Amino acid sequence: MMRILSAKQIRELDANTIAHEPVASIDLMERACHAFVQWFAEHIEATKKIGIVCGTGNNGGDGLGIARMLNDWNYSVKVWIVRGPVPESTDFQTNLSRLKDKRIEIFDIINESDKGLFHDRDVLIDAVFGSGLSRTPEGIYAQVINCINQTDVTRIAVDIPSGLMADSCSAEPIVKAHYTVSFQMPKLAFLFPGSHPYVGKWTMVDIGLNKSYIKNTDTPHFYFTAKDARRMIRKRSTFDHKGTFGHSLLIAGSSGKIGAAVLSARAALRSGTGLLTIHIPRCGYQIIQSSVPEAMASIDLHEDHVTECKALQNYSAVGIGPGLDQHPETVKAFRKILEEYKRPMVIDADALNMLAVHSELLSLVPAGSILTPHPKEFERIVGNWTDDFHKLEKLKTLASQLKSVVVLKGAYSAVATADKKVYFNSSGNPGMATGGSGDVLTGILTGLLAQRYDSADAARLGVYLHGLAGDLAVQGTGEYSLIASDLIHSLPAAFQRVLR
Image 1 (cartoon, helix red, strand yellow):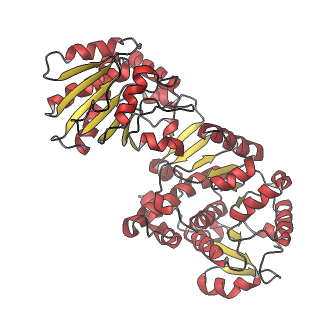
Image 2 (cartoon, one colour; image 1 turned 180 degrees about the vertical axis):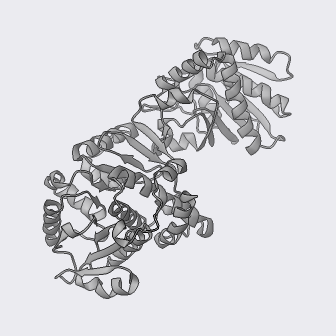
């Protein structure tokens, strides 16, 4: 599983690679430059005029190496060096000397720069500061960053946008990159909504850092990819039967919201649960029987909302919340369900809102449960936060306090486990921001939990499959027209993709 390291750990990783490969630091920089240029050449035409803005540290050294290589590849290149108080690093000096026999114009920026400084370039490469930055840029650096942002050109950051802190809160000025090419792994900041205006679309390039050292470096943050899903998913055996794959119970729906129960039920079936029962208010009986014929219906005594649910221990997994509403009788039923069902369950939507309003119920959540709030539901439970890093700490704390898994939904959905580790998801797209998408996820997670995946595995795998189904569906629908049912229709293809 891909580790996300802090800026300090990345510096230690660089040093370890240099010491134990062994490789000279300038040659490691050369590898990084070459990896960047390979990506660049695949995305930017050689007819474009390139400007590279460098600091005087190692990120600036990267920029100078990139300038030399792009020049060799017949790009038109100009270089600007920001001459602030940061001293020149040794590798910066080496790469600057290597430019002397190249026909590349180099300009020093010492005083306040005017707004038209980079006006004749089509693309600007930002190599002013790297991931080691520890304070907000000031003086000439701030002026140059603002100047970069005022240019109407494609902006590409080397490793990290200048001014953005890798693992702490940042303040402007920060380069607003359209693309960020990160060395070896993403930075934690890339995975937060507040960083998106600066990071743009990010990608990683392998620069050959010591993989053994990475594997043995302790971190609470991980990036979950297709490779991880492929290792985790279980193949079926010839003599398996429906009992092998568990009996799921979904408690969902209320008057006007039976559709949420339908979506969740269909997703649970597509996720491979052996049997499925749906507990719904009486008003949903005909809808469920006609819409989800593969499922069994458990009918509540009440016409419009859920007031009870019996024989809970007969089920391998319980999912509760989609379309449930928050009627006082439903709150009482939810309390009783929490008291009686002693195994992990999936808690979503109105069940989460009931936990927020009736906080005493949090202590009744069975250990190992999976909670799936979107940001607003999460805020109702934990209160507000000051920034994305503060929000992450609140996420870890909630998972630890509940001894459960908390999935904070959104781009790069964060799956926090009871040991305060967080797994960011790599699949999904903006088209999935549509009503019912969360109901589908609840069904998937309940189905996987019924198949005896442990809670953390069910959450990581389920979130990935949910996002992958969205990625496959969007190829036909586009982001604007994607609806929740499209995710269910694409789940079989998502499973097949992972099982390849």
